[in-house]
Length: 311
Image (cartoon, rainbow, N blue to C red; front, side, top):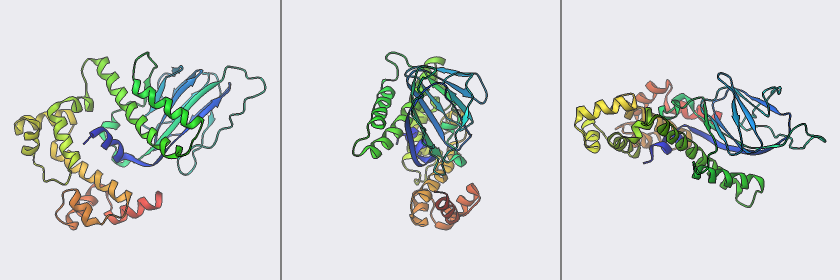
């Protein structure tokens, strides 16, 4: 089981969306805080990313920015441009922008690729929660080639939609998100010389093996001894290393992941509660419901109804 993919899938809700924007100076937007994450890629021209806190980020052709924590930010063609508020539609998408150029543009055009993902932040996976507000991946020759390829493919689909583009775009957006996250962790590793946080957990062979076991089969009755054996470590050594890198003891993370998995299943379809209980390691529907209510504050059935109303 790929822990990164699993962590993203656990938080994702709804469908991601994206748009290619042709812009003429002066232009500037202000995006409100939201539960989602967003990205912007400069295909042509330049732009400024203006976070609510911190210094503005200059972006040139090929640069990627990822807004991981859903905080307010601005995006503009210049630092002196007034920002127009962007109000998302109820489904989280943005209203259609008018690409028509003014008769005499006051500056060179910019072309941006913009997109967003809706997330359930009530159970934010620590792997994503540790990301900074702004992930900036500057364009460099030979760097992040897979990410660049995904950007090019997505841009082409949005510029000239073809039969099947809806499915292709959704798949490319999922791929792009994983490439952005991978590129950031690789950049951090190269910058610091050694991984830290969850990057270190995934880079550690023993801890990564245990995480794959937990994510691959959360319903298995794992013990610390079992996971330590999969990691090739003694019980005590494994427990210390896991807690140091992941931030909590192995069985605490196992319980957290079981509940996160259960919530994803409840949101996804009408799988019977007894089946979800078995898939997440509980011997009875009653035991599962009790654990779920302790984690989420509501019974599983009520959680499912609430999720259906907000979908």
